[in-house]
Length: 135
Image (cartoon, rainbow, N blue to C red; front, side, top):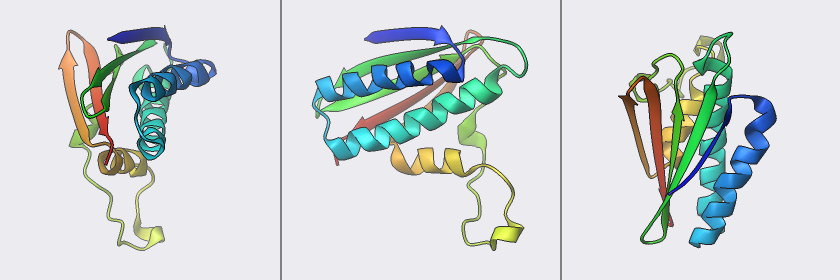
């Protein structure tokens, strides 16, 4: 397992994403799988950076675990406010744009693009695990 922990700041997003992409390439994942992983991982990281800590500072930790197939699990941890994104209902994508509420499409996209998505609260940490396989 590879681990990178940094302050939860948009200025660190590029470095965190490079960490994920480099490991995905080393694992031998197909370009399409890496593209899905990058979109979902960036959405999850930006959510932590923008929302987990409110006005206070905090850290985000990324753990990467390669599997067979090939596959890669991306685990994102933070000690911010408890938030289970999997409890948020899917938006009504058939509703007229004026009738839709703001937000929620990022989590919807994460559900559709990750092959496995799991959340748990572990010792005051939000732990979001996203797993990607070549399709």
